[in-house]
Length: 389
Ligand code: HH2
Image 1: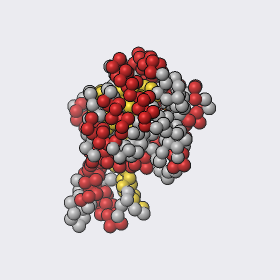
Image 2 (image 1 turned 90 degrees about the horizontal axis):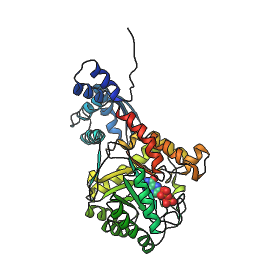
Image 3 (image 1 turned 90 degrees about the vertical axis):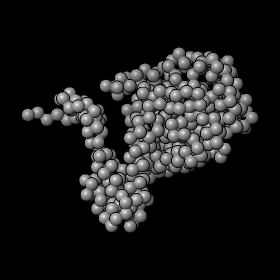
Image 4 (image 1 turned 135 degrees about the vertical axis):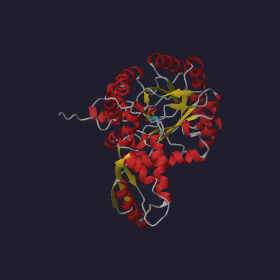
C-alpha cells in the first residue's frame, strides 16, 4: 500500500482524485466541497450563547473554542452547515439569531461570483481581469503627470487596451498618503472629458476613481459604468444613491480616515479579520441603500491605512474577504509595501507588482488594478492556467 497526500487546501485535488477512480464527478465535487476545512470567528458573542454553542458544536462534530466575547469554530463545511441548521430555540439548541447569521455566512461563502454587473454590461471574471490605471493627475505617486493632458490619457488608454486591460480606471485625485485633494470643479475638469473620450474610443468599460458623488454622476453620464470609491462609499453621503440610480458597478475599498490622515489609523490587532468586518459593514450599508449585490466588488485597500506587514497579512488571508461572496479586486501596483520587501524604488516595482497579483490570484482575487498591464497579464496567465487545471 502507498499513502499519497492530496493537496488539502485545494478541494479540486480530492474531487479529481475521486473522479479519476470512478466516482461520479458531481458526487466527487460535492464530497470535496463539503469536506473542505473552514475556520470561523464569531464575535461579539454573548456569554449566554457560549454554552449552547459549545454543546451543539460538539454534537455536530465541529471544534469550538470560546473566550471573552468570542468563539472560534473549526470544521468541515458540511458539519458547519449542520450546526447552522441546529438553531431554533429549544433548551439544547443554539439561539436563532446565531444560527441565522452562521447560515447567512455559509451561504455567502458558497457564492462563486464569476461576473460583475455594471451600468452597461456584465464583465466575465472566470479569468483574471486587468484594470488599467489612468491617473489624470499632476501628483500621483508613480505616474503623476504622465496622462495629465487628455491626448496623453487617450494614448495611454489605447496602449493599455492593447496590453490586455479589460477595464480602465480614470482618476482625478491622488489618494497617496498625505495628498491634498483638488477641489471638485478641478476634479470634474480633469476627469469628465477623459472618461468621455476613453469610453467612446476604446469601447472598454470605464470606471471612475472618485470619492465625490458629483464627479461620479458626471462621469457616469459621460460613459463610465463603474464607480471605484476608495472611501468605500463613506466619504460622500450621496454616493450610494448615485451608484444605485445609475445601476453602476461599484468597488467598495477599505480605508480608515482620509488619505491625508490614514497612516495614523494603521493600528490593528488582527488586520485581516478587521478589514473583512469593516468591508462587510460597508457592503451591508450599500445593499441597504439599494445597490444590487451583483454590482459590488470588494477591495482590501492595499496601502490605505496599512503598514507593510498589514498589507502582506491581508494578501495572505484574502480568504477572509473572498468569503463575503463578492469578486475581490486588489491594487498593489508599485506601492510602498512592495518597496519594503524588494528594496526597489517606485519606478522599478512592476515585477514585484506582478508577483503580488499572482499571490492574490492564488488566494482568490479576480481583478487587478495595475499600471503595467502587460507584465501583470503575463504573470496572471500562468496563475490562471494553474487554477484552471
Ligand atoms: N489604489 C490607489 C487608488 N485607487 N482603487 C482601488 N480600488 N484599489 C486600490 O488599491 C487603489 C485605488 C492608489 O494608487 P494610484 O492610483 O497609483 O496612486 P494615486 O492615488 O497617487 O493617484
